[in-house]
Image 1 (cartoon, one colour):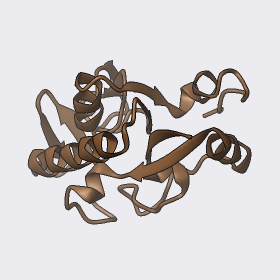
Image 2 (cartoon, helix red, strand yellow):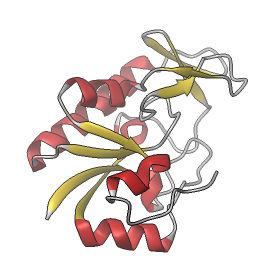
Image 3 (spheres, one colour):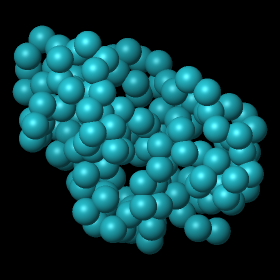
Length: 154
């Protein structure tokens, strides 16, 4: 079975900044489990940040909390651990939480905490992409599963 790196919050782990999760539906999870060996990672928690934590957004090469604290190093540590997990299991694919400052792939928030979206990758997504992994977000779940699932609504 092919290994798939997955943002842990999408699998129901309560590691989201507010203590919640972003769990996919049971049908989606079953389809993923049938096709892939799921390898959960949370670069933010794995990098040493607590749950819950102050929201953070990427501002250029830095990650700042809503209160102005620079948490870039924790994000980089978590990204490196995600990459190490991917390499240890031979992952070529990752399913990541959209718009996250660590896992956002292709689109992230702009650092103003106004929910303004901009093109870009989160810290972990950028590192994983540069290492050659193909990245998907939960909005691209149907593509990842070869069209077997309807797209998730927001």
